[in-house]
Image 1 (cartoon, rainbow, N blue to C red):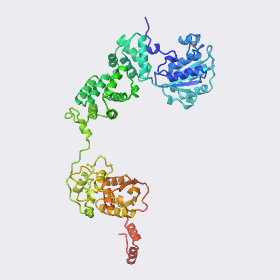
Image 2 (image 1 turned 60 degrees about the vertical axis):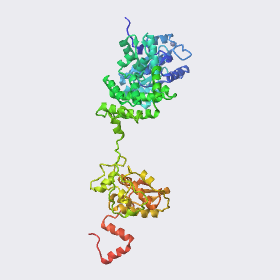
Image 3 (image 1 turned 90 degrees about the vertical axis):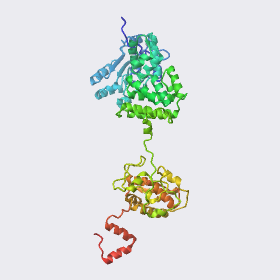
Image 4 (image 1 turned 135 degrees about the vertical axis):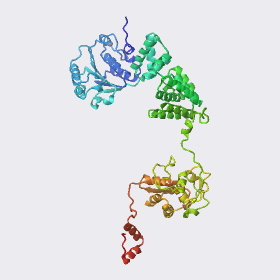
Length: 599
Ligand SMILES: [Zn+2]
């Protein structure tokens, strides 16, 4: 009875030429052998199952071969090659560091190294999973690696290069083995299938190759397993059922219904997929991959990034021609977001459904079908409620009432209006703070009404904002100086002093500075003050523009950590000193009347 040999062993490459998907490495090694420039130590690193040990063995055989072929391959017929083929060569020594990682194991190896080869030229020491060696073992090994005898060659293999000590790394020639491409794996599987007289559909082999994620050994194991189940013919359907892979048909189907904006079909397809036992996250990741594949299919240059069989490639090309790149990018972004948030979602199915409905909306923003029955996307897309026009409120009796009547009044945002009607001491605007304003809270209110009472535009204008202010005002370009600015600034501070003490403090803390292009820089102490200015920015700008008769005025805040040079007077004594500095007569008066300042 034939004993079964797993394909990974049976079809293990015996020459550099047959190593799958590592051409640059095998070419370099062949060249080194041909030119007799073989390093003392090599480090083969890369993911598992990509051919590191295989290459190490081929290397051991080839450098011992007595009659190399012109290509730099072993002849496979000389006594050395024959003994390698029978696994009876004494010139190869393999140590699996995963299970033999003690100092003693390494000492054994070091003892072996001292003995020269009885036949052949080189003794080759292959240490697999070398990162598993203990620290002490590493140290014991270092000396040998530093000054090995000329006949000794070391090939260290690891999946985790970062765990290798730099002292070891610096003594090795390093070869990075890459994941093997889907196409290469599929081709190799086809070769194995042919050799085993198994009829396998190319699509089936591609699915195996994709699932193997770059590891040929995994692909061959899966292949063996599937063949033992399916017998001598391997179909796509059998493969996706056994590997629990979601049929690409589903992705095409769901993308078609998304493109059509057909929410019903999309949700039904999702239901079918879930009924088939697939994890939701699997679908969303897979859909992301599908969209990515569609995107790369749109360009002749990138179509080679598609890791599929020719058959499926055509399906991609067809579907890609019906998508626009803008949609694909946005859809990819959406898939990615939902993928990231999937784990933290409480209702995973709803999470998926919303994702798909959003994709339908993206593809067909005007008229996705079934929109009444599925309001999900509608709601999420209009998270910010439309601001209702507000009725004008009674103007506050302030000295600014008469400013420039030809300038349309600014628009009052809803929270300002609220604050006006009900000047509650507890932060009245907190609940209705619009999304885009900073989160800093301040206990004042919007200065819009204060500075520009008698607004007439409140009913017609939908929202407040600096942009609106900019478009409303007729262009003015009067020249003004820093002194003009300071005068207007003081006036503005006076207007807000009563109602907005915090803003008043912020505005009067430092002198604003006029820069080029009528840019006014306001230095503030902290983020809260910055928020204060930000929240009232449109009104401040409007006030300055109208008072300075210049519509190019803009403001900008700078947060500083320098203390104010001159602290604002706080105690009565400080206040007196401040006044007395400007009006020396006051001091005289105090002295003459022998007044006491402290209460
Ligand atoms: Zn040979």
